[in-house]
Image (cartoon, rainbow, N blue to C red; front, side, top):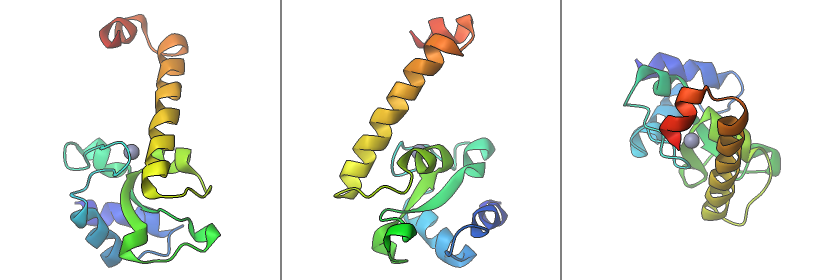
Amino acid sequence: MPLSLMTLSVVDSPVTLKEGLKILERDDHRCRYCGLDGRASFENALVMRVDFVVPRARKGKKDPNNLVACCIPCNTIKGTRVYASFDEAKAFVLKKQEELRKNWESKIARPLARSANA
Ligand SMILES: [Zn+2]
């Protein structure tokens, strides 16, 4: 049940369970950055969080307009830097993720996964 999973994020998030679930439902449990579908698998659901587009550390508000469904990897890549807009943040996250993917493919992936992704 995605509800209890949310409690994992409440620890370091000021968003309550109810508020977080509202955002996830609005965004259909999909990461707004990479599109990861939190309803497609339990593993995906485990990494779904709510992201402050303008980080709290930068005085971002707890307003639905500033909150989006987000997976942990995208949230980590995005960090606490400030972007001009959500689109700019998304472009940065996707570009960075592509760089990380190439690095993973060349250095970490098993040969089988490498050829499958080639
Ligand atoms: Zn994501």
